Amino acid sequence: MIATGRATARERPSLKPIRLYEGRKIDAHAHIGDFGGWANVACDAGELLAAMRLYNVERSCVFYTDNSLVRKAAALHPREVAGFVWPDPRQEGAVALVHRALTEWGFRGIKLHPLVHAFLPDDEAVHPIMEEARRARVPVLIHSGHAPFSLPWSIAELAERFRDVRVVMLHMGHGHGFYIQAAIAVAKRLENVYLETSGMPMHSKIKEAVERVGEDRVMYGSDIPFHDPGVEMARVCAAGLTEAQLERVFYRNARDALGV
Ligand SMILES: [Zn+2]
Image 1 (cartoon, rainbow, N blue to C red):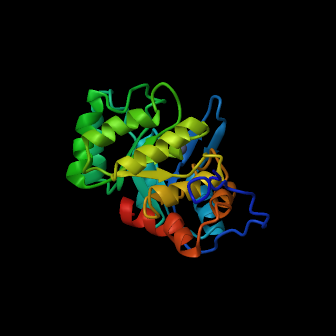
Image 2 (cartoon, rainbow, N blue to C red):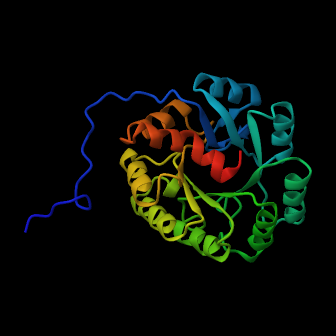
Image 3 (cartoon, rainbow, N blue to C red):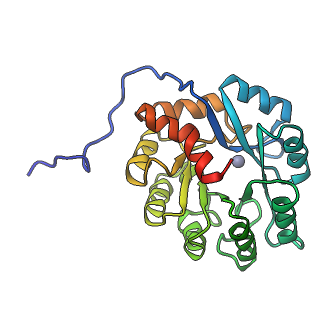
């Protein structure tokens, strides 16, 4: 029997030059600050804003481990910078920090990095932070794609426990094919899970995510300064999405799901 139909059709090279999407954008994943050590990258508020102007990015979701830096940038540039608070959940005062950021500083959500701070997403220490997200009705962005702390299946445990909190899986599984597949499967199963595209190498998986998970649950992010925004945009633009889907992935989905 010859296998036919959508399910078995292979993605083929497009054989068309990439045309960057010129419409307005929201960057769901951006940083200001200094990342030394192995990464050896940095970005200040001026550089972030310049990069945003270059590519018609109206607003960026910005986070850094020194939250005061983000607070300052968000206060200076309230239209361009949406601050997200980045706590170490097991550190004393983490919940209070999150509460203050959401209620006093005008921050728009929470970012968690289980690998950097060495905790499993469903750790007990994370639960009160999720309660804060629930109370403030803000999203939680979680780094994904690195064992042992940030695998899609582990993030699913947390997202399943807090079904009424929007969880964005940053990097949608990142560089590992099986993790990317798992990220798509988790988002397909759990309606409160969204996928963000930065650092994930396969353009075809962006289209697959849009088709299998939903065109309202995939969003663009750059992860500047770790990645170049132009490169990250090019991958989305190579995915073979329709103009309407591009508008959603580059703008509307972040606006609606993240409230920025
Ligand atoms: Zn990042």
